[in-house]
Length: 569
View 1 (cartoon, rainbow, N blue to C red):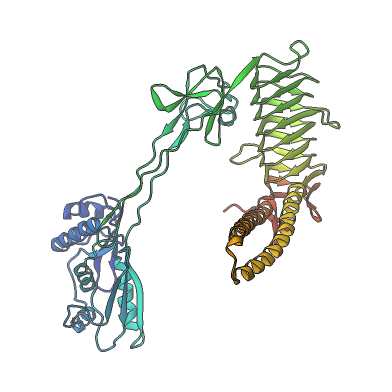
View 2: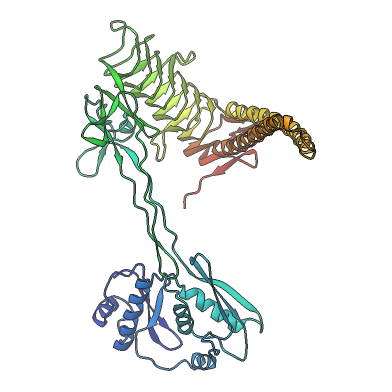
């Protein structure tokens, strides 16, 4: 039975049960409660059937009226009466209008909240919770009543100074929550998503070596569907009035390249040709796909408008250029690979260690098992499964060396131009070989843009102020009818000037936030160990690792690099 707990009142030695109306899902009777007690330290208590009946009624009422506060009540026979409570109750009285003395109830005009004020009076004890609730019901307040808040106010009124008024919100309605709009859901995975998710073996186990087949779809295959908008959640006012939620809107389907709407179902998206699916920014596209068993002097270089799948190796000095994703189920050696999407290399890539003559360029993300001697330029994330070394890297996304959830691979002896976080198991090497990470490039671009916007804004604000003064002086004069048309044109021009200023201020704000986020995201995390030889730069701010350390991170704190050990709790 969920939402039920037991305790003992040490003063009266009574068994107290506390029930959360939102979580309670059972039946409140003597047999059920006795079964619950058998497995607790309170099994020796006897139960009072009348009190259990009262508790059941209180639970049902709370669930019917939408109360959220837990209900606490004695369910064992009473040993003594609470004389203090009796005295307090006896002291309470109503005034002639049926109101409670010293109590004021304010209902919000939209009926979404109720406030109660109580003025402390030592000569008259505050009313009991039940009396306050009856007053609320008499005023038409049925839902969202907080017993806890009312009792807190009543308790505070006893302890506070005479004449002082205390107030709090004691009931709240539930605003409706509008439904979510329709959305596009892919029916087939992206190649990169499939590679990053190892394939299942028996049971719940996965085979880390089996990265799955690269998926291509046939013509007229279902590749995505539009899911209907949600209805939203109904709300209510404190008077119990239902407030309808707005259903989510149907969003128009944006068709990507080589896709169409199914003739029999306006919510189903089909492929127009056989190719590789790619779902990005809520749009499904199908890239015409070229498949080859390898790329070598026998096949020649590849330059293709769609996606490319290579089921083999790419040998030295060969080139693959594609506007779509490039997937290589093999090894790459000293080759040139350029993709308008993602690059996926299921094995490794290597170049000459001092020349970095194996170049990988991607507008999307790059995944490979291991790499060295590489020249990488990637606009999104870089994920190297095992080890990355002796390479030159520019990455505008995150860098993971190892599994994305907790990278434990090795990163050393490389030069990295980074824009976001870098995570690996081991960062640097025992030998102390240089690992240089520079965050200056992206930061300087943002700074230059922000400075340029600031300069433009300063100039325009000054000119706009002069124009506003001139316009004000003109409007203060009597304008001949022949000039009113020109004055209207002047008004329109200055209004456009104001709109331009507001637009520039928005860009200024966005750039300032982006610059702050850049510093927040600049961090290096070593989940296993960090070695000397690591150098991290942001212009003149430089961090150098001086000694070998265990799990640790380097990040910017108040504009300066700071080393922090990672302590697992």
